[in-house]
Image 1 (cartoon, rainbow, N blue to C red):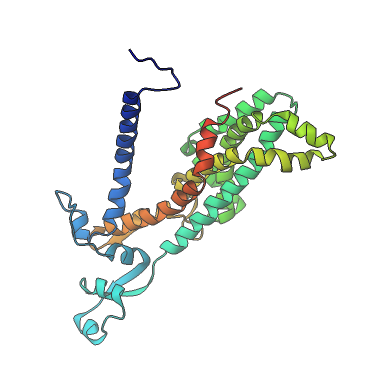
Image 2 (tube, rainbow, N blue to C red):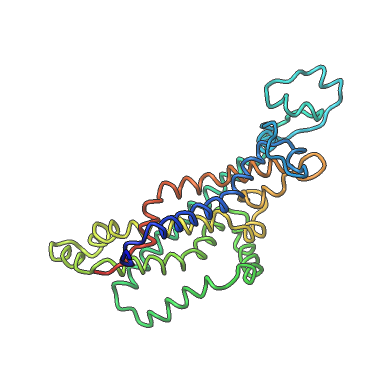
Length: 312
């Protein structure tokens, strides 16, 4: 009978664990792949039953996402031939392209607000977490619980007071207002996560730097921050995901200037109802920045999950 330790699983256990990981990955990827595929379907194929797996791909969804169209008479269409391949796609509905849609503007609003609030959350959260970790603060546990309690409250519970406050302050439908709001929501998560990472950094590193003549800020900037880079990257991903996907506040507090992509995508109207290929195309493009950001920081994310799990 072969024996093995807890740290050396058997080949059967490895095979079982690998199979479960593959199955889980496939199940979680199916909705994303289906959304991406739907973006290349025609409206008829997108709502067909049973769902079509094999179909003739088209860029109609992306054309409808980035353009606005209007219906024209047959005489007008005959007198004005298609100008490009996108115009040819919409001609089968007796329509012509008259301009660009607002998706690009809404997408850039998401980029500005999402990454802006993430930067502020990480900046303020790192400073607060360092203070809680390294200094004796009166009622520190109570303050930490108060900070965490702000995350427990559902957004809809404070939606009306925030709406009234923003209207009086002139922050409604502004980039600054949404950045400050998302920062306020995310900072509790940032403080708690980063405090745990900074607690794992030995104080002796800073003490050695202080002995060498560094100031407290220099020790923080040159010693603590590089050591906490893993935690900062992991926290940034979680903060960005919230700010990027947030819907309730975006619907309530924005309408035109600072509206983000989540409230805009469901309003895409096609011929006879929602244009599902255009919605799927918008969702696919909307997924890309967070996906790229996560992939770029994936090493830090994996290290951050296990950071401090093993003590020597």
